[in-house]
Image (cartoon, rainbow, N blue to C red; front, side, top):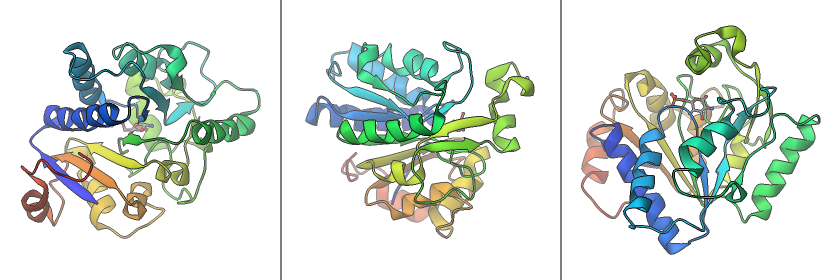
Length: 261
Ligand code: GLP
């Protein structure tokens, strides 16, 4: 696992946007897996700026969603479909046709989950999956004790995750869905390159357990330890509980040739 410590969220966003741009230059129709939440926003801003500046032609790139709430009315502004369209697809100048996500309003949720896994495989698989991390170590919406081999499926959110996400629903817990569809951990591990971004002190414990703790379903992000090419990008605050922080700084900082970055 590559652990890259950057000074702040903006630098992390710039670094990952450049990795995505490099991928799209190599493979113009790359399938980019994107995450929601506040953390990845600097990535999307930096990538859109590169597109506007003509540094990369992303017109053939494809985008896919990591997870989705179940049961929000169609077009709800906080559905992850709406968020990804607003924050990623539109700023990159892509059409809705280049975008895939699970159907959180399907009548048959089980079938919708299976269909999404099949659609990802049929699209050739995810080239780069961007991930955030929950304060409890979840990735996507794979809460603690998710099977490390899980595929896309319906999950129930923990109370902590609902509290963390209430800010997107006017701080009204009654509006926060209880159920979600999420790519499984096994599905996420199928991506060719995993890039997890974490910023802020609130993520420091989860980052330390992900990187230095044992592989454990209790910390779903620790499954990155199983992946052949996983990169963890953290700001100084999120790195503050890493015992090996100096080693990571020495090994990965200021070297332009991080694998795949
Ligand atoms: C939600 C999303 C995750 C995201 C997490 C953290 O749970 N499903 O993909 O990583 O929030 O969000 P934030 O980056 O806002 O802390």
